[in-house]
Amino acid sequence: MSKSKQYWLFKSEPSVFSIADLERSPKKITHWDGVRNYQARNFLRDSIKLGDGVLFYHSNADPPGIVGLAEVIQAGYPDHTAFDSKDPHFDPDSDPQKPIWYMVDIHHVKTFSTPIPLNALKAIKGLDKMILLQKGSRLSVQPVTGQEWKIILNLVNKL
DNA sequence: GCCAACGTTGGC
DNA sequence: GCCAACGTTGGC
Image (cartoon, rainbow, N blue to C red):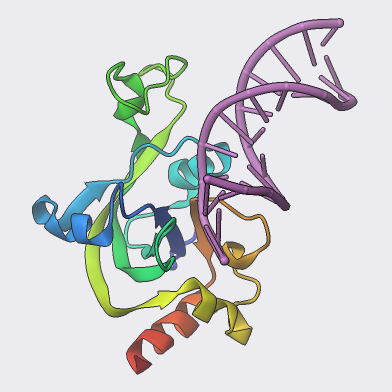
């Protein structure tokens, strides 16, 4: 298992849960629940570790873009919203004894005074391999390379 | 296992 | 609101 810090991008629709909502949450912490895609689930369950860095992305927003940073404070564990029949993300196939869906906990680190819009990201050479920017890509939890992270943080410091 | 139909995502 | 692209479902 790798000890070095890893980086991720989490998408959220601001009308559902924005970075401002995260900042307002108790202790600025939230469960990243409700992910119902197997590829994203695998990252949440197997790969995302305590201390990893998270780019907080607003999708279906005007404009869409990276709006801040968060930190993983709890690695993957079963998403209990799947067990709750009254929850919109309820999944009768997920059993507490054999959970299908997982979540992590994140803590707010920073809300950018100036978000980085999607169209600006597209214009940056070193980011052209980002999963986010691939045609047709819609993975809501995705890995970010150390190089991509560095480029983006440098960009933030210049804004 | 194939694949058509359907539902969802998410930019524009 | 439109629609392209993707993921899932289910009949066969």
